[in-house]
Structures are given as C-alpha cells and as structure tokens.
Image (cartoon, rainbow, N blue to C red; front, side, top):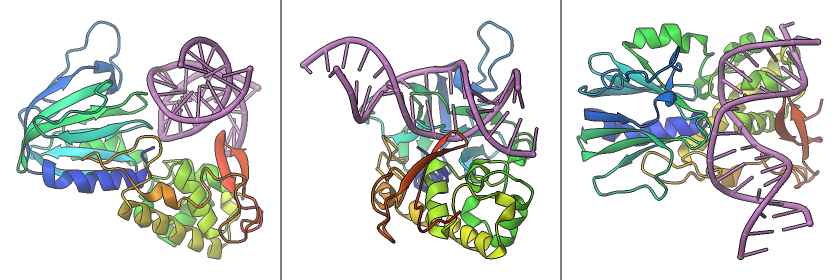
Length: 284
DNA sequence: CGGTACGCCTGAAGGC
DNA sequence: TGCCTTCAGGCGTACC
C-alpha cells in the first residue's frame, strides 16, 4: 500500500533514470485511468502530448502520496498509485512477472539507456492527471493538500489539528490536513507518540502535538530509508521490495504483545478504518 | 461539522 | 484440492 514513504522512495529510485529521459511514445491502454474521467460518452481522444510524448523529463516532484513527472516545457503528469498501483522502469528485454493491469506505458530514452516506464494498477484506485504546468497542478490539485508529513513541524501540526474535533486518527488520514499519511503510518506514529487514536484532535496538549510531529517525521524517514513497507506487493521503481513491514510495531498486530509493555494490542475501527493500538501505552 | 455508508476493483486469505 | 466468501484500502460522494 503506497503511502508517503513508498512514493518518496519511488521518486528517489526513479530520479536517476527518468531525469533527462526523452519520452518517445506513450500507450494508454485503459483511458479511464486518465482523470478526471471523460465527461459524456464515446472514446475520448487521449492526447499523448499531455502524457509527455515528445517531451523530456526535467524533474520529479512529490506531495503527500502523489508523484509528478515534469517535462522541461512544463507539461506534467501527476500519478497517484491508490492502493495497488505500481510504477516500474523496465529495460528493453525486461518483463513484469505479471503483465496484467498495465494501464499506461511510456517508451523512453533514459540517460541510463532505453526502456519503458509502466503504470500498473490492478484495483484501479490510482490514476493519472495531466497539467500544462506546475502552476496548474498546484492550483487545481495540490492546493487542497496539507503540509507534507515527511517534514511536518510541531507548530504546523498543532495549527492543523486545532481546527477539528474529530478523532486524531481520522484527522491524520485527512490529506487536506496533512499530506501523505495512510492507515499504516497513522497507527505507527500514534503508537510512537503514545497517543490514543480516539483522542480529539483539538484537545491534544502542546507536548502531545510535539511528540506526534516528531513521531510522524521519524516513522516516515525510517520507512523511506528502509525502502517503504512491503505489504502484499509493493515494489519500488526497479522492482525491489521494501523492508519496513518487518518493523511495524502495531499495524497488523492486534492481539500480539506490545513491544514496549507486553500488553496485548487492541484492534478497533476508527472512521471505518482498521486501527491497532496499545491500551496501556496509548491512554485515552 | 462529523460520522457513516457506499462504490470503485481485484486478489489474497480464510472457511468449509 | 477447489470453490465460495470476506476483507483490505484511498478517496470521492451522498446522506443523516
């Protein structure tokens, strides 16, 4: 499940391959992954140009869980992997072990040699958005996102949580408040900060938002370094699996003893999402 | 405002 | 072994 650390790791693993790469052609096999979905009916003419055909990739940018490939003329494609999405660079004779659900393929000439960049997403919760410029991406899509969780500082987090009466766990998952946190890292950060997932966001003490901000940065940085979490089938831009799943301290461990106090971890539902916490370390 | 439910979609995992 | 059911999840939207 790609969250911020997986996308950041993906960005780092793809940057040396994609920056400076010429996009020779694009094949969009499933037009409906290009968002927004076409209004009206009939086949929509897909503009290869909008998807960077003929351009040269100049830089990659990330905000929360989204990755943008930006061409030197400003055109860009913004990619969201949803929960089963995968972006991979393949060398000329390299094949995916399972080539089903490949929705878009860019044929590129990279500084590292020729190859293809493929977007694969079995569940299709992900998608592609195209924009003529980074300004438009910021205005139309990224303006709605909160500050990035990888670098969030205590005063900023405190300001974001102060305005909402929801459970802190739900607030953390709201991309408009803080960008990049998904179910796994929300639970991990709350455990790290010793905050109960049902605590009201606007009632957190300053010391708690301080602990939460550093727990968020810590868990994000650590997971980026480990190459992300491999859950089900996450792999990076070159097919390598992440190692952070081994270090999950609460996520997916309901019933197991807490690594800090040995009390059995509790599984509950918060805002419709599976949530695991330690009833002893994370007091209400 | 917040919370709840649903739809989207597939495959892994569990039950029998 | 194989079939069937359940669940997971990000995010938009509808509704109470």
